[in-house]
Length: 595
Image 1 (tube, helix red, strand yellow):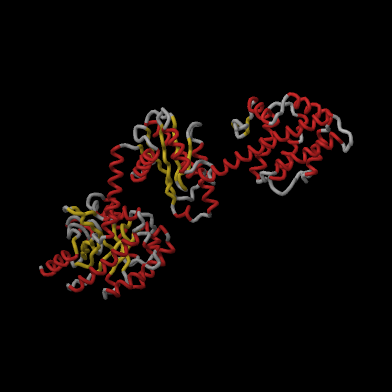
Image 2 (spheres, rainbow, N blue to C red; image 1 turned 135 degrees about the horizontal axis):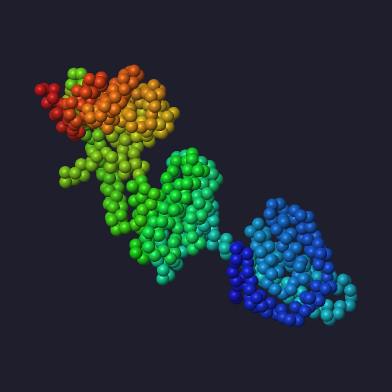
């Protein structure tokens, strides 16, 4: 059976003349029946018929049945239905009925309501024709027969509308995002497959956003509102033929049919990211987040939906890795992404297999040249003489959420190193670095205490280095964690001072005992008068707060002498020794002490 509702225009059903003719013929409604309906229209009082129908269905009051949108919608539908005697046999009246019943159905009306209303309308038409008379004329019977046929026709039409709407609901539930009202990932793959089956090239852009903790803490309705706002911003950038889809809570995809050059994909991607960033800067200033996008073109980069999506995602990952806004897929980009993924897997496996090690770099007192401490630095002997430093390791493990596990491993190894140093007669502190994430670990101090007790090491032999970013991230929680570490007896140091956002007030309020000058200042100490003045000022301020000062990155004797002249307490750098394994450090220390 062919559908009567051939298409929709701007959300309104359109019934063509041919479809209407097929509908009437299906129910045996021909020229004679049309003449009978016209005759009925001259007999019956239209407004009176409408009022009687509304009264029978308890819809006479403007509120109608129930509350909300359903009552007025049902009233409007019945008013349209009661216009049956005045129909001029054009598609306008059936279209109006379809539209008003669709509104009722969307508002929650039961699917059987049209048949109830039509039955009541038939009863009323019978009353108007026969008026309880015992004798009924043949013409009246013909008119009533035509009314019944037309009502059957209307029932079939409205039943089809209900079925189509129900199918649309099911399709929407399976293939649509319930919040954004656009296709979800399942539907996205089907739509992309359809476009790739055509003769024209197809572009694809995948847009993602990395929100900070501020967005994750918002109520769900506010998060939905944020998603909807950025979806509308993206809809304002796409062409009429483009297809915007939701791939998840923080990702969108735009299918770009008829794109013939990669530059067009790049232009579209940049335009989308710009629209999102403008909206974020203007309307969501309190949210910490960053948008990025990746693009690909078929058939140049892939010929199937999953391959094209993977290519666009690889470009998105590359854009994020480079702190950019957009990247376009290329063979070299794919190789780099594959290498990054392989490195991530290798780093995780190496950590789980305990292949990492701690190296120690000494810290020297500038007044008597004694070794007063050492910083524990993470190293990964990757093989073939290659040793990977902490920056690469931390970047990978940070992406996979393993920073806290790494920090606890480092603390354990540092405590073991202190035990080995004490056994060799080297009574120095060993410093370990903590991240901002570690300072949110409320069990960190308990773990430190238990680890020190296990290895019979006093916590006073540990120093915990925290960067300025760790202080600023969550001051209240940071302060509690630092106080707990101080209570264990551990030493606290503010690392890389001068490169972050902390004010001098932090030095007063945070329970640190040491300040480390960032090597970027120390390395230029004898080459730049401004850096020299900054270092001298920081040393004086630190001493004002009763803090000891360590200069990092001391590469030569002249730098060490200048630091000493400025009042710096300790120094660390290649001028004294490179980082080395614990056993090598003990040998180095014993040789230094003996000579």
